[in-house]
Image (tube, rainbow, N blue to C red; front, top):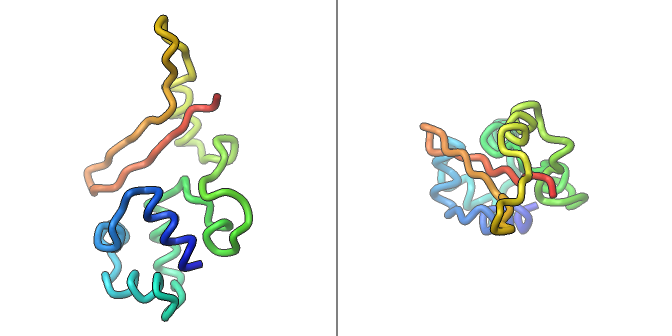
Length: 115
């Protein structure tokens, strides 16, 4: 799991410090998890799930599936975002491929409209 968590941090372009601060966990605990010294506890996983809802926890824990959840399996909030920003092609042929929503607690969510 530690290798997959590192892959996730790289995909999100996060440092260990930023990640720990976002989850409100000790910076050392992230370091210990990434090194394989410790396994994440329930509070860590719960915070991870709340702050990064697009992350597929099954992939993180077992390696099965993809890193991110499919658009079809997103919660209703994700569905609302897809309704607000439907996949459209502009006159120039450009398409929306990613939407970032930033929150006041320094977290963000990334949405990928279905193609």
